[in-house]
Image 1 (cartoon, rainbow, N blue to C red):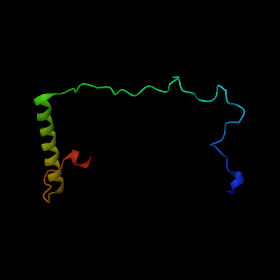
Image 2: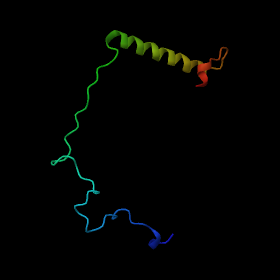
Image 3: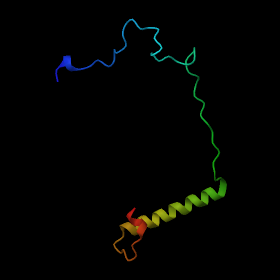
Length: 81
Protein backbone atom coordinates (compact mmCIF):
# COMPACT_ATOMS: atom_id res chain seq x y z
CA UNK A 1 0.00 0.00 0.00
CA UNK A 2 1.54 3.28 -1.02
CA UNK A 3 1.19 6.58 0.82
CA UNK A 4 -1.46 8.12 -1.50
CA UNK A 5 -3.75 5.14 -0.81
CA UNK A 6 -3.93 5.87 2.93
CA UNK A 7 -6.69 7.99 4.45
CA UNK A 8 -5.82 10.81 6.86
CA UNK A 9 -8.19 10.19 9.76
CA UNK A 10 -6.68 12.88 12.00
CA UNK A 11 -7.68 15.79 9.81
CA UNK A 12 -11.06 14.64 8.56
CA UNK A 13 -12.96 17.79 9.54
CA UNK A 14 -13.12 20.26 6.71
CA UNK A 15 -11.40 23.59 7.47
CA UNK A 16 -14.55 25.70 6.88
CA UNK A 17 -16.84 23.86 9.33
CA UNK A 18 -15.92 25.40 12.67
CA UNK A 19 -19.47 25.92 14.00
CA UNK A 20 -20.92 22.64 12.74
CA UNK A 21 -23.24 20.66 15.04
CA UNK A 22 -21.38 17.51 14.02
CA UNK A 23 -18.28 18.57 15.95
CA UNK A 24 -18.18 17.36 19.55
CA UNK A 25 -18.26 20.01 22.23
CA UNK A 26 -18.29 19.75 26.01
CA UNK A 27 -21.62 20.00 27.76
CA UNK A 28 -20.21 22.36 30.35
CA UNK A 29 -18.83 25.80 29.61
CA UNK A 30 -15.92 25.40 32.05
CA UNK A 31 -15.24 21.76 31.16
CA UNK A 32 -16.37 18.66 32.97
CA UNK A 33 -16.66 18.78 36.78
CA UNK A 34 -14.14 16.75 38.80
CA UNK A 35 -14.97 13.10 39.40
CA UNK A 36 -16.24 12.34 42.88
CA UNK A 37 -15.83 8.61 43.58
CA UNK A 38 -18.73 6.75 45.13
CA UNK A 39 -18.13 5.23 48.52
CA UNK A 40 -20.01 1.97 48.80
CA UNK A 41 -20.47 0.25 52.14
CA UNK A 42 -18.96 -3.20 52.59
CA UNK A 43 -21.46 -6.03 52.57
CA UNK A 44 -19.70 -8.01 55.30
CA UNK A 45 -17.85 -6.27 58.12
CA UNK A 46 -15.94 -7.10 61.23
CA UNK A 47 -15.22 -10.52 62.60
CA UNK A 48 -17.39 -12.35 60.06
CA UNK A 49 -15.34 -10.88 57.21
CA UNK A 50 -12.05 -11.90 58.83
CA UNK A 51 -13.36 -15.40 59.57
CA UNK A 52 -14.61 -15.90 55.99
CA UNK A 53 -11.32 -14.63 54.57
CA UNK A 54 -9.35 -17.03 56.76
CA UNK A 55 -11.62 -19.94 55.83
CA UNK A 56 -11.38 -19.23 52.08
CA UNK A 57 -7.60 -18.95 52.22
CA UNK A 58 -7.38 -22.19 54.21
CA UNK A 59 -9.48 -24.05 51.63
CA UNK A 60 -7.44 -22.64 48.76
CA UNK A 61 -4.17 -23.62 50.45
CA UNK A 62 -5.47 -27.14 51.03
CA UNK A 63 -6.57 -27.39 47.40
CA UNK A 64 -3.18 -26.16 46.18
CA UNK A 65 -1.25 -28.59 48.37
CA UNK A 66 -3.42 -31.47 47.13
CA UNK A 67 -2.88 -30.43 43.52
CA UNK A 68 0.92 -30.43 43.81
CA UNK A 69 1.32 -33.46 46.05
CA UNK A 70 2.38 -36.84 44.65
CA UNK A 71 -0.46 -38.69 46.33
CA UNK A 72 -3.63 -37.78 44.45
CA UNK A 73 -5.76 -40.50 46.01
CA UNK A 74 -8.97 -38.46 46.00
CA UNK A 75 -9.11 -36.22 42.92
CA UNK A 76 -11.77 -33.59 43.11
CA UNK A 77 -13.97 -32.23 40.36
CA UNK A 78 -13.01 -28.70 41.39
CA UNK A 79 -9.29 -29.36 40.87
CA UNK A 80 -9.84 -29.26 37.11
CA UNK A 81 -11.26 -25.73 37.08
